[in-house]
Length: 424
Image (cartoon, rainbow, N blue to C red; front, side, top):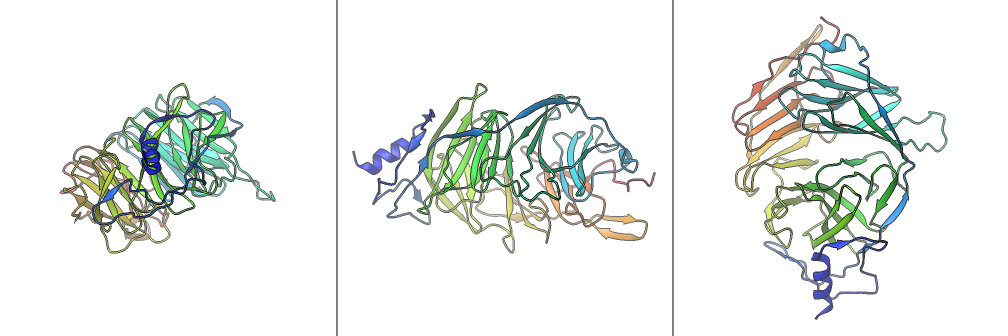
């Protein structure tokens, strides 16, 4: 069998990781490696070097069980989360959020009555960065301790909070950052079916932990470019090697910590984002192009550029094999989830239609403005879409929850409109 065929078969075969997972050394120079066929582009002569060696380092995890007591912030139970932060609505009545009003600490927020009232928990000297709500009861957050302002070489620990009973009791892990990791621009991968661990993408490396030790497969010379979950299957990871070849494969972590990797295939470009509807039906994208596969990445079809007038980051959420949404065009200076345009496809990404969002005005005592910017707060297939409608970036105003039961054709404003904290 030709060497390229042997490597191709090895990459596609699921492999259980021991001390050494899969090692394709630099001594193997492949002069021909047609591992995938593309509809509009084809990788010809390629030299591949992928080094996957499982590394394990101490996470110095400290696990505690805590409970939060609501603390007042300007009669906060009558206000809404506003400014820089994230809000997720796993159900029509339940939402979880964090905001970062100042550098002395952040706040966690929670509502169980559709936003009529909110409970705020003050978290001093903690800076939150990501929240995920898997249903009304299961919530995870990632943040970090704010470093001592006088520290010469600050190395603030990561904080991982998780609850399975709607916030009555939380489990908190305090974790040192992975080696060479940087808490800035950290992407968290929270536990779910197929991946029972906390993962972080820091500095182009993907590390995961169950609270005690960090594990990774990648040396610093290869760069992880995107990570996303596959429903019930674990995580899909896109990698660019030092030889500028691009790959994607799957990692699972079982409830007992067993790690499995496999399904590695070559991608048509350096991938910056992915969305998988099933284990075989997926979409990947670069800053300028979108691709689709129906066979797990063995072949890819180019779909053309992203919808919108310019590229500055985006989010793709497919609700069926044909229907999905793209949130694009982030506001100037806003976080990655502060988008201004929403598009819909009914052709698996081949064509797009821009969705008209409602114009919502708000009034403060001495100011009247219009809401801009949104986050996709929830998607319930096949047609229900919920947005937390700006401004997320902290430019003032009072965000509103809007939702559509018919894939964006018509929109409804939530029953409980936002009020200014402290005015009632």
